[in-house]
Image (cartoon, rainbow, N blue to C red):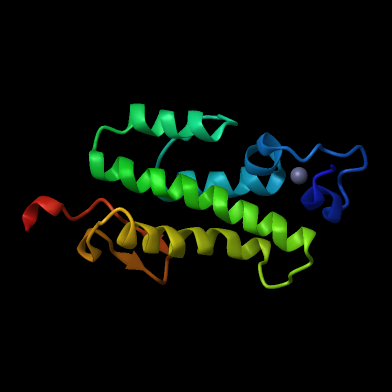
Length: 143
Ligand SMILES: [Zn+2]
């Protein structure tokens, strides 16, 4: 199947095959989103086109356990939002726009960390104006 994201944008006359590597890593939208995520986290995310290899990279290269957990959650959330965006195009759901992907990643990874990683709200400071999440400021060791 041809990537519907590229196809709808009309710059895909040859057709990129819609596979995991393409949708989550190689598609223009994915490349753009990962760039934003990398600069948000201030991390050099390597050009890896495999989810488990990317998680392995985070595991191996981030020494701080809490930061590692948060980055892991953000990687999952990014994949999830790219998938939701892809579905919104395939199923013609106008609710999710390309411009919403990044905001959704920020909001949902915040929720995820609250609810699943068991991290405390005090670990985070969201500046809603700049939309930056700064999860690594406060230490859990304080309480
Ligand atoms: Zn594509």
